[in-house]
Length: 445
Image (tube, rainbow, N blue to C red):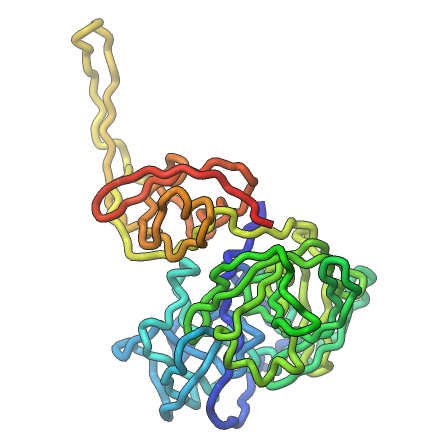
C-alpha cells in the first residue's frame, strides 16, 4: 500500500536580504547525466549531500532560492565561510529569525559539485524538522540545483537524474503532458484548471512545490472560497512556526489530459502566510507532493517547461488522516531483545514436575538497543483520538498490540490513513503510567 501524506509542509521561504551572485553546479568532464537516489518521506524528497566534506541530508524543495542549513549547533564540525548575520522569514505564525549568510562553500550531490555555494545557516535549535519526518534533516536545497540541470524525478523508483542541459534530448512520449512554466523569483509556476462544487473550471497560477506534502494549497479570494464542507487542522511546519488552516476537497483538477476528482485541498490561514501577502495577487497557491508523486516529473528551467508522465500511484485515493493524530520522534528508549545474529547461549534438558515430560530449554543471548520513542505532537480537535482522551505529549508504546519501536514513523502514520472504521488500539505512557485507548478511524469528508 502506498504511503499517504502526513502533510508536513516545508515551503515558501521569503528571504529578507539582498540578491547574490549565483554560483553553478557542474558534472565531471565528459559526464552527461548523474543519477541520485532519494528517500520519499511524507511525500518529500530527501537526498544525501556532502557539504564542506560532511555528509548531511537535504530536502529537495523547488520553493527555496538559496540552500538553508539548520539542525546544527555551534559545536558541529561544519566550516562556515565568510559569514554575515541576516534575517529570514518563512511560512508560519512566528517571528522572523536570525541566520548567517555564508559563501564559498563546497557542495556535492553524487558527482555533481559546486565549489562556490552560498547558503544560509540557522543555529536556532527550535528550527528542526527531523522529529516530524523521523530521520535527520540538515537543510533544504532548491533553485541552485534546478537552474543548472534538467532534473528528472522518478517518484516510483526514488531516483533523480541530473542532465547536463547541453546534452539533454527530450524523448517523445505519447502518454506525457508538457506544460509551460514561468520561473519567478527562482520558483516554477504553472497554470492549471480547477473546479469547486457546481462552479465552472477556472485557471489558477500555482507553484510546483516539491517541498510541500499536501496535494493542493489554495489562497482564498472572491473566486476561490473555502467550501462549506471543511474542517480546521494543523497543515504543517514552516521556517517561522506552525501553519494552520482548513482542509476540504475539490471537485476537479486538470493538468492537460490528466484529471483528478475529489482531491484533497488545504487553505492556510492569513497569519500563517502573512509573508506571502504581496504575492497573492498573482499567485493562487501551490501543487505539492501528494499530486507530484503520481508522476515522473521533468523540470527544464532553461526551456521553462515541465513534463508529467503518470505512474502506478496515479489512481491512489486522496485521503486525510482519519485519527487526528500527528506523530513525531521524541528521544529514545532502551529495549532488550534477542540477538538473532548470535548463537544460542545454552541448551539443556528439563523435566516437568507434573507429568514427567522432558522439555528442551533454550537460553538466548540478548542485546540492548536504543529505539525511537514516538509521541503525539498534536491532536485535531474533535477527532476520534481526541474524543477518547488522548493528549499531546502522550508517548505511544504499542499500536494494535505491537511495540512501536518495530515501526518507522512513516509506517505508524500510514495506519491512520487506511480504512474508515478500522479499530486502532494504542497503549500510551503518560506521567509514568501505561494507559490503553481504543478508537475507530473516521473519514470527515
